[in-house]
Image (cartoon, rainbow, N blue to C red; front, top):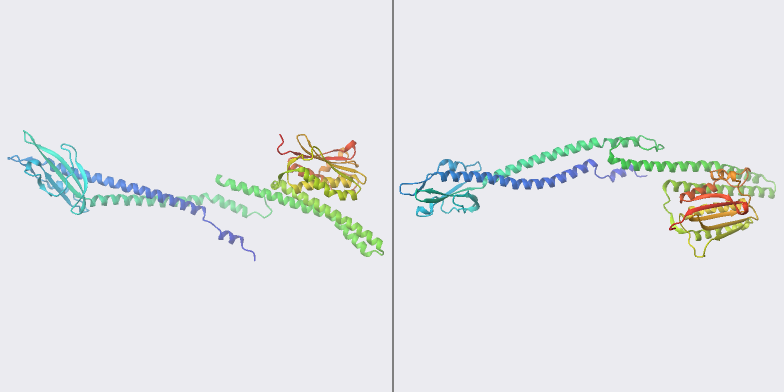
Length: 479
């Protein structure tokens, strides 16, 4: 049981265009999203650090503004509750501080004596540093200021520190919100692609319906409107359908011509065999069998010519795929040599003349089988129509910038007025309906010559007698 073509297509089916686009979109978006999230994380950390550093520096400035000297010239700082309140957060960060002054009899005025100090510039902006204090990471801000006594100044440094829980929470929140927005954008883009691809593929569905609704014999070009990206495949389909139409037309021509041309020989064979079967003597039966054999020979010849014509039609429709550059001289020698026995049996003197030196090359682009059929037709026609006692000469030479192959005979020839007609299929150009041939030999030769860029000319033979059939072909590599 033959396999189901649809099942075979389904078994080998790849992802649809919609799924491919979605897959590529998701992969590309995920890669870009990962890069965007990495950049967002870095930016979120910078933003959180900047916000926290501003609060930390502001708290240090508030404390520094409360610095004063008592009556003994000793530095005193009343730390306001608001300065520490500024640093409180929902993340429960811990706050540390210290105040140092060289005039205080020691460096520490108040606060945590083991808290590291950032290198701050006197009178400048706050200095920041990230350190580990009491086993936890902290961010410190140090601010160097001085209090005037009227005579000189008493320098001091305010250092504020805060654990980093709040800024980490803030960075994570920014990253999470960015990730949620990016995920929403990806899902929205996927939905848009799904809808847009579905809408965009509708012309392809209409194209499939238009092709599926046709009957098998309808090979007209597909004219359904399709997007620009699909026009090339549609053109290829139309080209294929055109070639199929040409092949089917050739097949129809072949079958029609074969039926028409073989009907008469088959009728003759059947009749003669019936006569042979009813013959009362051997001589009558033998004569009937001979007439049947002659009709069979004619049928074989008709079939051979029709097959040659079909090959020419196929080559014209699809291009000559087996043409090759070759030396014409050896091919002509072999083909002429193959016809010598038949010519001798018919009483015809068949000869070959090749102009130029013995090693001369006649390079042409040919398909040997088709060109062999053309030369076979010319030589066979000359032998058949020239008659017993005639001379047939096959001549190979250079002429008109190319290669010319002539088959000349001194027989009755073809009247000038009929030479154009005999190049049409099934036109024998003879007044006698019983003349041999079926009007295909010369048309086949002409179409084969055209197939290889050449032509066929008919002219009078030597001394204006007979016929000269000349094939001209372009020479390959000629200057």
